[in-house]
Image (tube, rainbow, N blue to C red; front, side, top):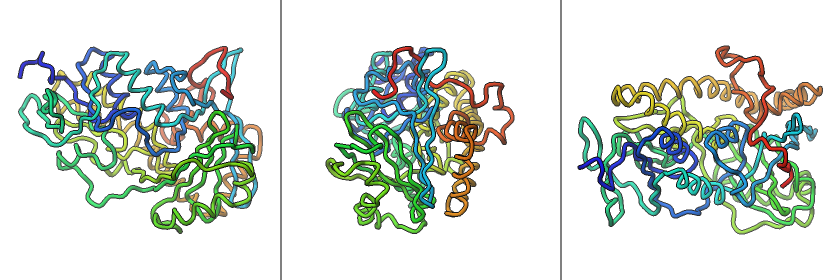
Length: 423
């Protein structure tokens, strides 16, 4: 196949979610010929809490993304945590310095965010084919690989030097490379629904409720513009409630007085609820195989303590792109080695720390103690909320190479003198 043919590329990315788009933008910026395929047609929804941590926001800014392209982007700085004892703690993320406003937390509906990222990537020169699903590996040689898709046109077969699998927890690419995880159902399971006519404090503030029966899981309400919110809860598999219990638990959870008070008596559920598994076992999964690098949910990169995954997905995409850029001249083994080294450096210590902290949160008494300490002084409130939203890596205290003079003092993302924190 000739290198200039339409279905030839340096890197084929399967999946146009945040992980895949982050990889594509990183690669295109260095001159790589990239093709992205996705079985969906955008805009498409993705069941998610819609929350963006500081880490996610900084990567989006680095990738040149413009948050104003997301109609219902909501900047948030006011955070309320509720202890199993019923004690509530108000925390405020910083949002300004020297007359400039920066973002440390935001909420963006995935149907809008993912579509905006696809459009941003296209504007940066990334070729994206929608409604085109990976089906199999057709051929492999010592120099490249050919994959088959369900397309009926020129993209029925695509030839590439490398494949980046950003195709989710049950990644067909992983399966094709013999790296699938049979019977794997994820560490977490989450349940979400949108709500409108929010008149209580959850209209503007972000809430996380650590109710004793949900631990180490939690319930949340993330505000959106125009009196809407994303509300839901997550449970760890093997905890008090099973996945089958979630649907019946949902109305009882919504009726709890503290949740009803936060939403307001007139809050109204929209549409249907949705649920999804969350893969969070990056230290125990295969990171690459053959000419394929696995990223996002395909590499099980979500935070094992909170289930948060957008920031992690974006980072894995950037790391995969950087590995190919930096090592492709040395061959596929060098690319895989570089990527796996980057993943271990950026994820493994934090994952293990999150696992330890998650075990602490299984105990209501210990959870109460942690939140009491977090809310005890101005210093603990200020720094706990920054650490909670990943202003710094979770295990930074155990990884001295990541210490720096501005620890927990950096600005957020998308600095502007005119940005409103309330949308």
